Image (tube, rainbow, N blue to C red; front, side, top):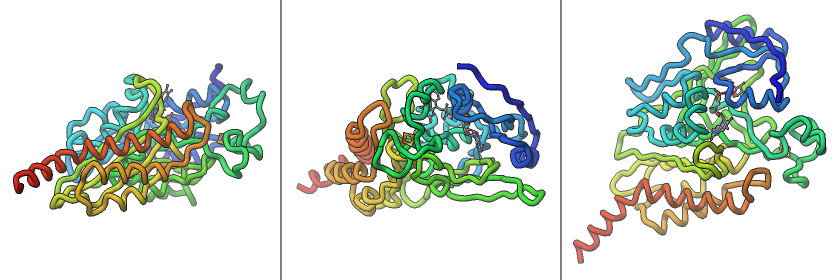
Length: 344
Ligand SMILES: Cc1cc2nc3c(=O)[nH]c(=O)nc-3n(C[C@H](O)[C@H](O)[C@H](O)COP(=O)(O)OP(=O)(O)OC[C@H]3O[C@@H](n4cnc5c(N)ncnc54)[C@H](O)[C@@H]3O)c2cc1C
Ligand code: SF4
């Protein structure tokens, strides 16, 4: 697979980067390149210019000394995954960052690139020769979905690890774009960045880039807990085939402010609302966890476009959700049992 020819621009500021993206023809942002360069080799995009965000000053820092975590978009995932304060207070993010690909990919891949990773599909992420042998699907401008032929939309899968964890932790993104000769910045919640349509999942304007990813301080009343689990074929390197992130606060023995977010089973991270309702305000125990896990699986929308069947991926949502809830709260229900036994 041969890399096509392109120019590389190395801006020093965010303003310069977004101006270049807005004014140069067919320009794309480049961060670590671990997602983009393989896609260029497959011929999925054909930019004439890549705007290298890693040359922009100040976008690689990770700061969790104040309230919350403040990450420049070009912060390497290995740095995020090595930060002791993130492991302590925002564990879901640390676990998700530590589970991306393998060590080399985490050293080069960035948090911003992970948040902006394109959706994936077995019928799309293929060589040009392979793709020539099949009909042009919706994501390639055709009018059929090869994975779900009766569907009118693309079901390519959202397979980035950190966004479900960031959504569970109520994360936000800061963005910048060039308009009317000036740099326009805005901030929004992570969940508003995605739509459940595989061919246009990322809700950024043309030329708009992520500059920072922010996680707010943990909710202080009670004890905040979070975690991330993923199912993949090869533990050493693979994308998630199903993944679950949970964030919750334990207060007076009950679960509060619960968030359950699924990855790898739809074209966007999915907030499992029914599962969240099952858990909110309840004392944790094995039956509650099992019921919430069944509810989470009902929110999954896998189609046959990944390495395992939709049924297997949905089943793994149940397994992972139940396992993660037990991991996060089992100390509470063993202490509740101890209390009950002491009262006998
Ligand atoms: C073998 C292999 C295994 C992998 N396994 C995993 C995995 O398990 N989990 C996982 O999540 N990922 C995985 N990846 C994908 C990739 O390594 C990661 O998602 C990584 O975090 C991408 O970051 P990057 O900096 O390399 O992004 P890039 O490749 O530079 O960019 C990715 C996309 O985002 C855009 N982009 C980058 N930065 C910005 C920005 N700041 N603003 C707007 N757009 C931007 C680019 O234009 C491009 O479209 C794997 C990749 C490979 C090759
Ligand atoms: S889900 Fe369907 S439309 Fe989308 S990339 Fe795959 S085959 Fe193409």
